[in-house]
Amino acid sequence: MQTIQKIGIAVFAIAFTVFLTAPALSEYALSPDILQQVIQKPYHAAAITKEAQSMLGKTYSNNFIFINDLNTALSAAKTQQDQAAKIVHWKATALPEGVSEWDFRIGDLNPYRFELVKASSKGFLTAHTPLMLFLSFGLGILGALLYILPKGNSLAGIQHHGIFHSSMHFRGWLGILTGIFLIVFYIFLYWFPEYLTGWVQLVEPLSRRLSGNGASQWFLYGVLYTICVLVMGVRMLLKYRHNRYQQIRTLSVMFFQTTFAFLIPEILVRLHQPYFDFKNMWPLKYDFFFEWHLEKLLKNGTFGLFMLVWGMALFLIGVPVLTYFFGKRWYCSWVCGCGGLAETLGDPYRQLSDKTLKAWKLERYLIHGVLVFAVVMTALVLYTYFTGASNILFLSSYDVRSWYGFLIGSAFAGVVGTGFYPLMGNRVWCRFGCPLAAYLGMVQKYKSRFRITVNGGQCISCGNCSTYCEMGIDVRSYAQKGQDIVRSSCVGCGVCAAVCPRGVLRLENGDDIAERAQTERVIHIRLDQVGLLNQDILN
Image 1 (spheres, rainbow, N blue to C red):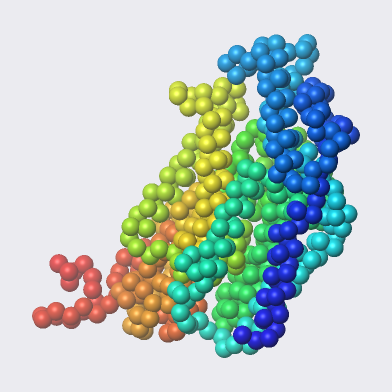
Image 2: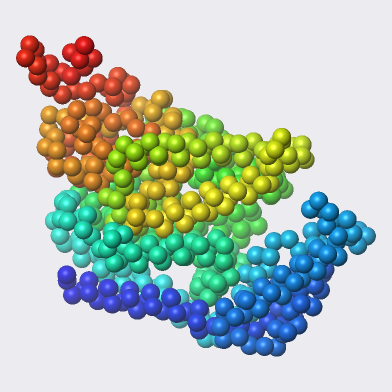
């Protein structure tokens, strides 16, 4: 290891330590002014202020104790309001005249909890946010680049070199620590964001400059996500510098994540327009047809209507047309943020994708099951939106959307999809859970010109292609049979072709995709004849 790489590791370790300890540098003090500032609804404010009297004027040095006391106060206030409203069959029957139910009752406590914790924060971190931002994010980026850039001096090309024994594997110490950190981070991000307010404070100045609003846990996530794609994208550019396709594809995912997924939505908010990611679409964006989202778009005039039409046209027209010409790679490997993170941050784990037939069967059941779940959930949501009725037979649209958001949108896509990189490879979500990938895959398999062609006569069975396939495809078995690869799961990343030492594999578009994918072009020798392995000889 070069000296500059050792310096990079040391700098990154310092930055990561600062990042981890940053929340401990805050104190918390709740005041009447903070309650009035955060809680805009009078009945909510009165109930919460009453229950939080014991916290006022008290300074907490530990956020866990502060959040525990705040939770107690918020829960008591919610119970008080529910009792006053006299709930019958989940509906309030005793409300002040002229007051709507949810202006009186306290519903979801999470927004109040997060904003109150954040607003109550003070101390060194709050007073020196730019310094802490540099010491954590700035030095972290610098340290990572110092470690990555010297790799450009090595010889181009891909070799195994003990890839399955890497410490990034879940059986390696670094893989274990990384997996635990990612899983815990996603659990707190989705369900306990109030504990992340120290980290959110770090990116507060950046959020103010971009959108004009304070930072949320999702802005923090967007910053971390984009930094990972950009920094590890540099690593991808160096690692696959011998392959032009990989260079352009990596630059593409870096561009779309930075501009379309991060910057443009924040700038739209600053311009008083709806937050909107123009590259994201249903069913991956499962809440696209939720009533709050539809109403938000429709209330923003012509531009909001354009966003609605764009989002619908993207999955109704864009998917079949673009997938017909280019396969699902146009989205999964060039545009999608999930794929972008998998290809950059997740590249050290790509060899861990299970290539067994059992995994392939499970993959097909799971991913198409999630797609069906998304379609049913969306149908129920639209039924409720147009009719006002929330129940169809035994199904409640509110319950179904809630379960989808919890199981698929949070637990599967986040906790498992990224946290399991060191255990199951970098495309866990794309391979087993993404409903959009399932939709794209069906079009690719049956109505697309795209396939990976094989020159089986040149294959030396080294296994590089299968090892590096992140989608769990045993590419070598196709190459050995001389059979072109048309799999609905293939995202067309082209890494199998990039790591092949013999140039056996090529990514192509053509008209004879169905015929070529079914033909096995290998020499078959029998006592009475020699020829290509096909159905005539087998019979």
